[in-house]
Length: 590
Image (cartoon, helix red, strand yellow):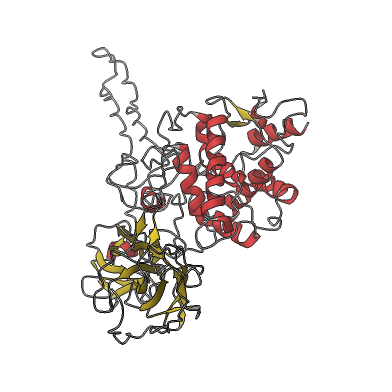
C-alpha cells in the first residue's frame, strides 16, 4: 500500500500545496532534525534559503533545478533470501541504484575515510544528492568507466528565473560560451568544478561527466570547512552549500535516510528516472528551446458579389491578417558585483616563507576594485596553489574560493607548507569575469636545527677489530624546541680541521655489510632524536672523530677510541658535548 501511495503522491503532487505537504510528512517520519522547517517546494528564485557557510551563494550547482520526487515510505531493502549484490526487480517507486553509480559513491566514501577521516562521509549522502541532481545519472546511463553516455546539463544560468553566472570555462564543459550550466551526474557548475574536480577512476582526467570523478569531487566539496557530517549542524551546512534551499535540504535528508534503511543494485541503464523538477513552470527542460511562432491567423475573405447584385453597395474588402504580437523582450539582468570589478590589487602581503611542515604566518589577500579604485563587496575570488611543492591551504586543498567582504577584501585560508622544499605560486582570480589575476610567490625551506647534542655521556671505546657497544644518539632542537624531521649527515672525519671522510678507523656498515664512513639521508624523529647505526672498528688503534651535522648548521663532534689488542681502556673526554664549535685538538689521531 505504501508503495502505491508513493506513486500516487508523485503523480498527484501537481500543486505547490500538495508537494509541500508531502515533503513535510516525509521530513517528520524519515529524517531527524528536519521537522518543523519551511518545506515549500523549491522553485527558481525561491527565497527560503540559508546562506552558504563557505560564503558562496551559488553552491556547487549554481542553485540549479533538481528533481523533487519523494522517496517511497517503505524501505527498499531486499528480503533475507536475496544474496547481497543480486539485482532485484522493483517497481518504479522502489528502483535500486545502478551498479556502477553505487560503486562510485562507495569508493568515494572509502577514499574520504582515509583522506578526511574527520568528515565521516556516508555514501548514502552522495547517493541522495546524485538522485536529486540527476536521477542517478539518468538511471545509470554510463559506460564501463563511469562516463555518462549522454551529456547531462542544467539550464543556462542567465538570470532568467535562475542564478546569473556568466561563462567561466569558454564552453569547455557545458558547450555554452555565454553562460554556465550545471554539468554531469552531480551537476557541478564549471566555475566550481575548476577547483573541486577530482580524478576518481585513476585515468588522469577530472571529468564532471564521469560518475567516479563527480562523486569524489562532491565528497570533497561536502567535507570542506572541517565539517563533520556526523554532526547535524555540519551536515545541514554542507548540503545547503551544494544547493542553497531548505526544500533541497529536506529532500536530500529524506533520500539519505531512505538509502540508510537498505538499498539494492540494478543493472546500469535500468534505473528509474524521476519525473518532477523544481523548475517546472519556469523552464520545462534543462536546455529549453524557443517555441516556434504560430503562423498568423487570417479571416476568410467574403465571397465576391456579382456585378449589380449588391444593391449599389460597395463590395467589402478582405480583413487583413492579424499579426502575432511580438514576444516580450526579457528585461536585461541587473548588473552583479562581479560585473563591476576592473582589477584586483594585493593587500600588502610580505615575503611568504615557511619551513617544511610549518604553517605560513602571512595571509594572502586581494581587494576587488572598480576602474576608479572603489572597493567591491560580495565578489568571489578563487585562490589557486601551483608549483612543485606539496604546499596547500589549511585542510589540504589547493584551491579555495572566498567572497570579498564589505571592504572588497578576500583573504585566502592559511597556507600550510608540506615536506617538499622550493618555490610555489598562489594566484588570485575573479570567478566569472576575465580580470588579470594577482600572483604571489612563496617558498618552503627545509627543516633546520640550531643546536645538536649527544644524549649520553659515556665515553665510546672498543677493541681493534671489534664493535662499539653503545650506539650514538643525538637530539636536535630549534629555538629550544625539538627539531623533528631535520636532515642529518654523519661522517667519520680525518681531523678537526679536515672534514673529509677518513679511510681507516671506525666505520658503519651498508646494506651489503661493507664499511662506509659517511651517512646521508638521516632524519630526526618527532622528538628531534636520532640514533645512528652501530659502529665497528678496523685494526687501527687510536682516537677518531665522528662529526654529525644538521640542516641549519648545528654540529657536534664525538670522539671514538679504538684500543690496540690487549691494551686497557683509556677514557677520553668528550670535547664537544655542546653544539658550539670545538677547540682543535692537535693530538687527535688521523
